[in-house]
Image 1 (cartoon, rainbow, N blue to C red):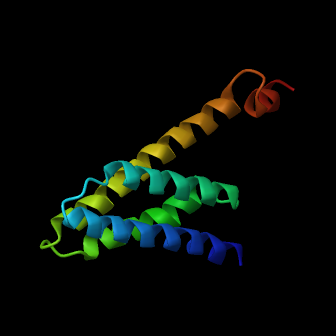
Image 2 (cartoon, rainbow, N blue to C red; image 1 turned 90 degrees about the vertical axis):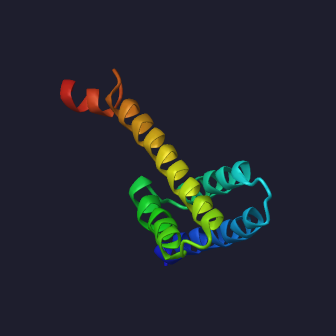
Length: 116
């Protein structure tokens, strides 16, 4: 049930990205909106209990599938999904680094396991 909820979150945000891709094809600048949608999806999925691996598995895989399924005639659509995919990876990298340093700093859980 929780996995289905996380998939639903990703699907809703992908639907918005499809709309942005169509706007991009008409010549509108949507790059800030794409990044906002990706960030909101990640925040919403984190709030529902997803970790970075879940987000990469569900939302990241869906973004990748969308970008590879589009044929070369829809370059602007493809670029919207590529930007979304790259920005998601950047956010996940930052999140994973934050988690790593939070758990490995002095006084953190890793320090406590080693020194107590």
